[in-house]
Length: 203
Ligand SMILES: Cc1cc2nc3c(=O)[nH]c(=O)nc-3n(C[C@H](O)[C@H](O)[C@H](O)COP(=O)(O)O)c2cc1C
Image (cartoon, rainbow, N blue to C red):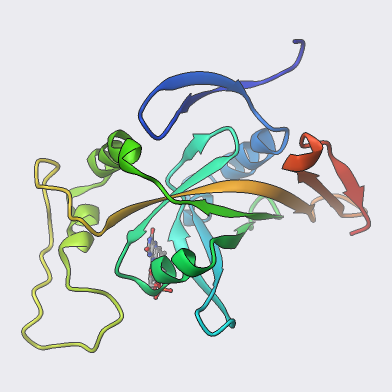
């Protein structure tokens, strides 16, 4: 097919495939490139619904694409967000790329992973730095601080993967882009259930 972009995709069991990319993926990619080495190329905000129905939002590191329309994050399964996703898997991500003057909002659902996810979890574990891995050896997050708490600084790739090292693979259902670099601003959206056809909106 002329003009159709493909991406290498690794499913949760580690099987590589080539599937077409949705049209918003190259837009995110080029916005990331505009950010260069700035943290904004990888830092995004993840919103969930707390157990009492109120919203929660926090910053996470973008860990790559798990499929053409699946986004990978890493977290601690003992954290509040992990419990919130168990109860209510709907999420929204807000990703601001200031140099590109663009905001992407991605709506989707958390895909609980089964035993098949082990190779992908392993791959992400290997890709972390020793200091990054060490965070998962820290005591359970969000609990009261204890002076005796152990906080290791480094963990090698050979260390056993902690049980609470969690790959969050999010199935993207809707995407909205706002580009302030044009006059008038460009706002457009895509829906997975509409074959990712673009709909231009008033900004
Ligand atoms: C720059 C930055 C990057 C972060 N990256 C992650 C991450 O990749 N995964 C994660 O679980 N928490 C990350 N955090 C911590 C979260 O923002 C949050 O404080 C923590 O996960 C606890 O959130 P919760 O209590 O809502 O579950 C990051 C924080 C900052 C400031």
